[in-house]
Amino acid sequence: MTPAAADVQASFCWSLGQTWRLLGVDTVMLAPGSRSTPLALALLQLGWRTEVFLDERSAAFAALGYGVATGRPAVALCTSGTAAAHFHAAVVEADLSGVPMIVVTADRPPELRDVGAPQTIDQTRLFGSVVRWFHDPGVADWSTRGSWGSLAAHAVSSAKGLDPGPVHLNLPFREPLVGKPDVVADRHLATDHGRPCLDDGQLADLDESLVGLGVVIAGRGCGAPREVSALGARLGWPVFADARSGVDGVRHFDSLLRSAFAADSAPSVALRLGEPPASKVLSQWVTARCSEQIHVSARPGFFDPDHRVIRHVVADPDALLPRLAVGRTVDDAWRSGWQRADDLAAAAIDERLDGAFPSGPAVARTLAKTLGVDSRIVVSSSMPVRDLEWFGGSLSSAVISNRGANGIDGVIATAIGAAVSDGRPTVALVGDVAFAHDVSSLVGLAARDVDVRVVVVDNDGGGIFHYLPQAAMLETATFERLFGTPHGTDAAAVAAGFGLRARRVGTRDEFVDAVTAPGPSVTVVATDRRTDVELHTELHRIVAESMSGR
Image (tube, rainbow, N blue to C red; front, top):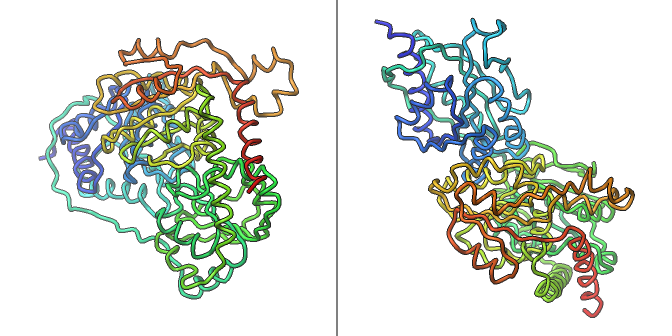
């Protein structure tokens, strides 16, 4: 006998959740709503980790953070209508950053579409081309139950494929929304994805290109840090290491590249691994100096905004890098010179920042020195990611930053999602504007079983705009209104209003004490936008001066 319609929907959702769990997907970031009831109940009853966010944007960015931290998709689930539209920013970031995510939007059934039914919008291909796969199977029908496990497996396979990213399932449900599942026994479906590699001829051709003086630029997705460093040593090239790379290479490259030391350098080849660092100075220097740029990534997307890459290599860096420059004998003077310069830069920056707390660079460097390998940093775009990349120095902690679209939205939620994945202490380093963007993610944070410590570098506005031409070209009042955007928000009071331990600090010791205490917590450090601009200029200058006596 065919079960009742509500029971069929419950069975369908149970089948999805059961198959996903067999395939290693067992965490849902849920925004509450009525129409998503069948799937929400099924996942909860199956024992999934269920994190509830009142704001759909927060739920989606939490799913993003989980995917970045684990390489496995979480499910982001919401009800119908504009709720689904609030997922869009995180879906875009997941696409550009290659982060697996299963986005599930509940929907009205076909008979309620285009007739003025409440909470109903056109959700068909809502996210356009940014998803790896879209599917709307229609209202669950008992006669199609043999395909339910395959549908669930297809979603996981598409999210975790050779080009990982978001998938979108739009699931219409009819009332009544609560039913009793008739458990469907599904086969354990699996998809194996091999990573691309080069054949011997392609490898030899690439190897021949990596000669002379060059640089390795390592970003997120560069491959195992040990292999990146070993390749740099075999080539005799310095490794300019983005904070997200995990590589302990030349970390102060942005300041060094502004000095006469870099102006006298003449590399001919740049080997770019993974995603690009934030530094525009690095891109400009490489474009001006290197006649050949080679990009290696496991993903097929292009990273070439300057249109100077002559070879795009789609291959698994972990498999490729150990096969390059094997047995090569090189003069290490070029690489060693850059490493000595980096050491001098580190000493100069340390000396200057000893008396520069509080400031954006001092907060970033102190955080990098304070946190250990058991912690992670989720850093906001805009100035925090630049301060960490340029002045953070050597890092023990893993670093996450949403640099696909470079947005400042959802950073706290991203940190929560990352922390959910493994319970690791996670520090979200944000500016005050990014904090204000994501205040809704503080709802319920005090009660979550996660150690998230939010650090707010509070300069009361958009600090990054002071580094742009607008700051010098516009009258102060106009600049402040359009770009500086002072808002006067008391971040500590806001956090306390959500029941979080909140503290304002003014000294380095107070800061270290605050960020080493288990969270959830919010620590606010007041800085000055204009003073930070002057400090950046001074830090670059003293690094250049430290090179003069080398």
